[in-house]
Image (tube, rainbow, N blue to C red; front, top):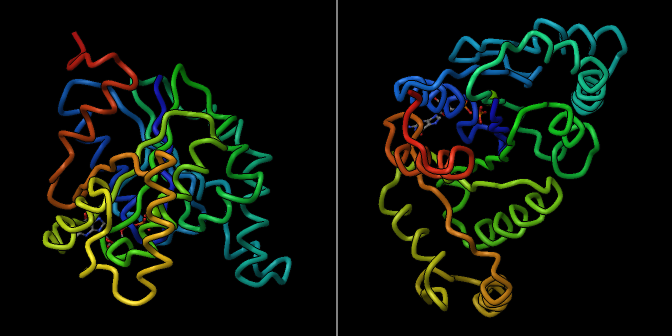
Length: 245
Ligand SMILES: Nc1nc2c(ncn2[C@@H]2O[C@H](COP(=O)(O)OP(=O)(O)O)[C@@H](O)[C@H]2O)c(=O)[nH]1
Ligand SMILES: [Mg+2]
């Protein structure tokens, strides 16, 4: 079983991407399972094969221990770390396991619980998929922060990593502009706005240290960019093999 572990900013489309990839891989003849590891999700739009919400009731924990939003979140994730093996025992073997996670990125960046969950999940190969959306990245400072974050996270998780910029159906023009930021030697002056000098400096450092690895531009809603994303998944995991016999 090969594992795609999806992390990313809140509301970027991680859950929609989970179901879109799973469906698309199934259409290609691969078997796939989905695992919802987000205990805070209250309106999942797909039916996960295995769902952590059957194990952890976030609202109940908040009430029982008198925790605020942040406390309950950290507590839930720590609790999840202690029961993850039981949750995983429910996952039946498939070609692919797609894992959907909570949007509180801090849990995956700075705290041990997120990384621990990633490590516990078995499988022949694992990859990290880092999802953000085109609205967030249309601001150059956010774009730059995301590139640094993405590089740091791929090193921390020590796994192949894919950067996905989602929701391009909602703003194709900005997506085109952001695509160019990955390629140009200098950022276009028109895009820089205020703090041009400081931003250009960060951009140059990012570029010269090889941090600007190309991203995938997708729409989980329309399926745009999914073929390219799947081709990369297939390249990472199956050496480019298209279909199961
Ligand atoms: N137009 C459009 N909407 C999307 C796309 N991906 C997700 N959404 C919508 O954005 C909202 C948040 O998506 P969700 O998958 O729950 O994000 P998550 O919080 O990262 O799991 C939902 O209303 C989705 O229907 C996309 O590619 N295009
Ligand atoms: Mg979600």
